[in-house]
Structure formats: structure tokens, C-alpha cells
Image (tube, rainbow, N blue to C red):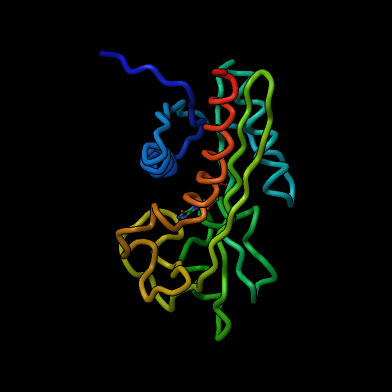
Length: 188
Ligand code: IMP
């Protein structure tokens, strides 16, 4: 039987969708997937990038959609790689990041979730603070093997509760509060 979805996640990244699906399920929202690589504008603002991607995605699919844009911001590198996180991961990767760091290893992940339908365009931002580990630990995707969230000794790759504390979880929680309220008020 085909499942019907009210809301779609548009991304080329299966990992992000899987996590978003688990998180939104926990809030009672059934999330579908359009696997598609959206063009990214050049900008130093994650929010600007996410809003543009969401508008383009809505124009393409004509259904309520969310997109996500993230960045890993490292304090001692003045916020690098930030909006360039995807490119930096593909080029120098986790090894390259580890080679750049010395004593100060403070960092944060930021997630922007942008929603778009025929009437609304809204963005939700959240962050998680942490540190970059001294070596890669665990087998997660992206920067997971080198990011240790605050109050933990283990990387995102090694913990089982990433989806209840990550930058993605926090941004999707804000989104869900707004979205569920919108659905309720439209029903009345
Ligand atoms: P973008 O939002 O697709 O541009 O992703 C930015 C970069 O951050 C990509 O290289 C992702 O692999 C990485 N990234 C985003 N979120 C996470 C996460 O939760 N864990 C590990 N890496 C992440």
C-alpha cells in the first residue's frame, strides 16, 4: 500500500532524511522524501541558503516541503567551515579538520529548517555546542565521528541518543510546534 504524506523533506542526503523522519515521527508528523540535489546559492548566511532552497523546492514539487541547511562552526577557525561545511567535508574531510586544530577545540553545529507552502515561508534555527575530538571515533556519517556534544565524552557517532539532542532535533522541534499549531488552527 502506498503511504500518503502531508509534508516532504527535499534533500540529496539520505542520512539527514532518516534522522528527520525519526524525529518528526516522535512528534506525530509523517514525513515523505523527495531525493533531489537542490542548487545552493553562494552566501555566508545559512538562513539565506535554506530559504532559497525551500522556495525552489516548493516551486518544483508544489507540495508543502522542508529543507535543511547545516554548518559546523569551529571557534578557533573563526567559524570555518560554517556555510562551506559540505565542500570542506568533500575536500579535506575529518582528517583535514583534525590537522587544523590545536588546543581550543570548541565548536557548534547549526541547523536551519526552512518550510515552504503556497502561503507560508518560515525558518527555524537551532544549535548544539560541543568540541572537536582529538581523533575520529565511531562510524557515523559526515562530521559525526569528530563532534562531541556538550556534556558528553563520546562523539555523535558513538552515542545512541543523537536524535533527541542534536541541532537537527532542536530545529525540528521548533518547526513542529509551529507546524502542528498551524494545522490545528486551519482545521477550525
Ligand atoms: P549541508 O547542509 O548539506 O550543506 O551540509 C553541511 C555539511 O555538514 C555536510 O557535509 C554534512 O555532512 C555535515 N553535517 C550536517 N549535519 C550533520 C550531522 O548531523 N552530522 C554530521 N555531519 C553533518
